[in-house]
Length: 130
Image 1 (cartoon, rainbow, N blue to C red):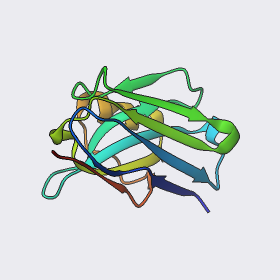
Image 2 (cartoon, rainbow, N blue to C red):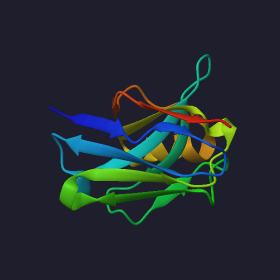
Image 3 (tube, rainbow, N blue to C red):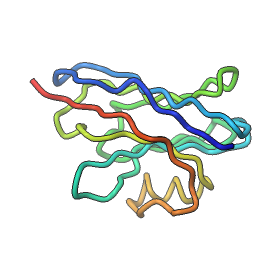
Image 4 (cartoon, one colour):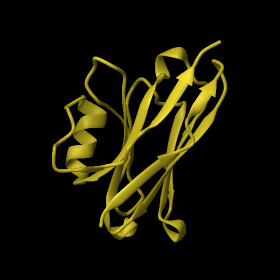
């Protein structure tokens, strides 16, 4: 059974950092692309970052470029999203998902809504507020 479980969200002040984790199971992480998305109430899910199956291609939305870093540790089946210099506008529920890399890339780079074919975690809340 394919599963993704996010953790690491919380309440932080502007300028602080958080590291989100996405623990995967039921599939081989080395063969799979993973994306991070976020969503605020009333808005569509937004692509934030993605990493390909080889781990060598990483993409970021313009809104987080230079502040967020995606990485993975295949030994523990986990993908991370390091979020630095957080801003109030980063407040959202953050999700990880597995899908075909072109679909993830399109969401992150071009803002195309994510496909329905991917498998998603349950999300973790990130709140940035003073």
